[in-house]
Length: 256
Image: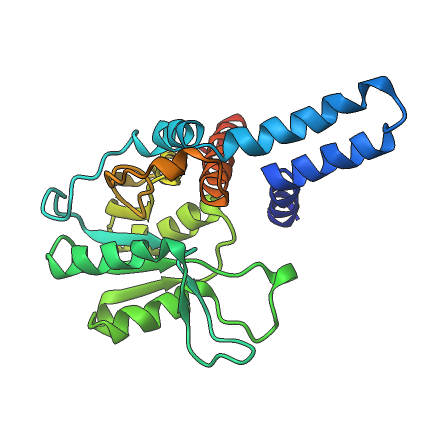
């Protein structure tokens, strides 16, 4: 219940939804002298969060907490734990899986394994029962199939397919790995998600070695047109705010 509610609230609290609600409020107040206030707030919300300097600041506030050491700079661990959110499973008209924006998570896990940083890869990710088709595969199983397709042996992959959020990623992964004596892990997730994920996995009992992936910042791209507000930066700002608020909530709940 909490997981589904948090997903719904997260969808409603994104900048675009909030701006639309403000515009609806302005329309309802159209005959009042203060109707311009929610209209201005909606404009500033979209323009500000879609502006590169604001977006970069928010993104760097999260990604900068765990800089990218590169594959060679990572220490050796007992296992690699890669979190879901990276693939879309087969369904509808498409018999094959699809890589999402966060698929760098799988790429980093593959590179870590090929560099002999750990002998085992745990894929963690289930499905939201309330929002999923009955025959939909848990994401961890789709991730496992891709990693096997890319050359990792099946006996080197462990699947945790019941988790629905980051806390469950950590607690259920611990239940699988702790009986094997595995505590020291390379944790692979998106760089913006890493502060929350690392805190939760440490709380669960792991010795966490962060292996961030899917960086937005730091690619030395320079384009004067980026200073014009655009949807890409709005989306990045939204993801950063989601993680900032998510980390705050997890800490208040005692999960991180």
